[in-house]
Length: 362
Image 1: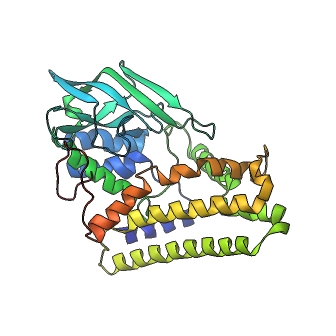
Image 2: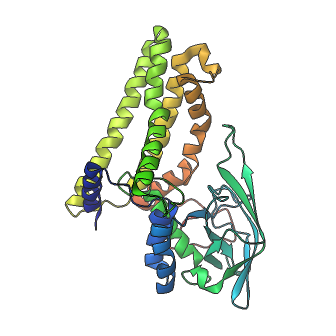
Image 3: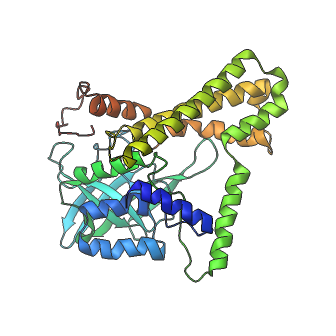
């Protein structure tokens, strides 16, 4: 089923008021990875489980000392009989304290060049040797975690792909993650377990509650409109120009997505620019909204009411830098566009342990 068919099914499902299909990292990232790199046994074990049992997953790729260099892996995996023994640490792992499994990249050959000697695993979270510590951000939330491994165990059957070739699997993950910023890549929905003992009515109530909460939270655009209603008496020509520029960015992104969809319907897929471009555009729109909201409030922008639009906007303001970092920084997206889409020269490698690999992420 191509994306045009997916959109048609989605529209018909919405007309009927049917519940959304399973979503989250498992269905959107792990499932297609298993189709490409997994074994028949792994697909029989994990695909039905994530669809019907609500098994959940998180990514365990980033490390504290590596920054955006995903290949700078120091977490080790050592073979011990029919198990791999894991030692090390991962960071920025969303939902690590809630999920069933982590998608883990570990070094299995410490003597190999940086992009070699890596293996991609699925690791059960609820086991001895795994310590999960929440990381509190400046918003006050603790949605990220640091995970410590001390002699944790993984059965040999939970290696995804070929041992020592984990970077190939990671590249698949990165490509899927980039596409997740395209609105046609997958559907949104509840992230978490579904109790199969619940009735359809209970599930529907849960879904309606989730949508109601999202509606109450509203988007930054609506928050800014509310702020303008409250503080709009001081609106200047510069503020109006900012609103026009923000509107332009939104329309450009909408037209770009329409162009992508039309090209796919005609059987002419574009060369993969849409994921990075969408993410960069979202980052730009987020910064424009942040600046416009602060400027609209004037001196009141330094304050945060406990309730109302200004309080919600203050939370948005504090969380806005994450948009340019999560899922690959803006700098990485620009490098992708420059080197792979425009075929510009690659940046010089500063790490002597790096090796040049065709179409490689460095």
